[in-house]
Amino acid sequence: MNIFVARTSVVISMLALSGCLQTMKNTLSFGDILVPTSKSAKYKKIKTGAPLTKRLMQAEAKATNSAKKVLKVGRKMALVDKEIVRGSCWDYADTVYKRAGFSRKLPQRQTVFNGSKRRGPYADIRQIKPGDFLYYINHSYGGVEHSGIFVDWENINKKTALMLSYGGENRRSPARYRIYDLSHVYHITRPKEI
Image 1 (cartoon, rainbow, N blue to C red):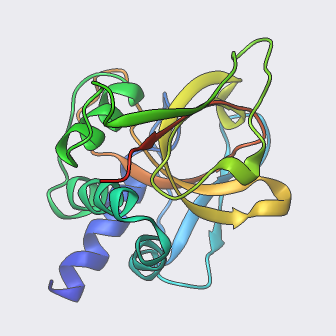
Image 2: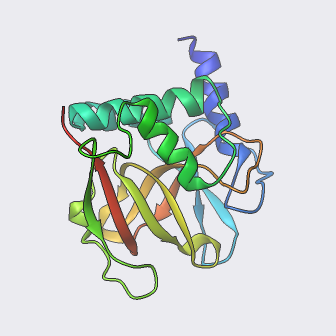
């Protein structure tokens, strides 16, 4: 893959969305990621220490075979094809799973954890693995529910992670990679090993 195209794709994907309801207008350098500054919809740039593509490859390398398929399909849809899947954040993650060969029909997916948004219980973060389809409270946007695909921990002690997610609301933008607070994950789905 042409490195210029890959870098441009990453920057465009990261700029495309910055929360479920608003578009970010800041300019990001390659390797920067957006993180929430508080429970408001404001964000700041941080240096990740590694280019996004390198982090994605590292996550794929440590994933199980089934999870690796999910992560590769998601990366291709978001960064290479810049594909738009109209619908919700759930629709996007579900489409990634289907295209990776893991439909909702059993036994292609397994529920690892199931709580509720309002009452919990919430998942122990040690249960979360690369390629997991998570439902979580989006603390960076008013505590609404959100879903996405877990890529890797940004800081496990602070419960922040790099996620692939779509902003939803039928918008005409591809999914993006962004850091989320995963302190309140209430559902974990995982592709079954094949």
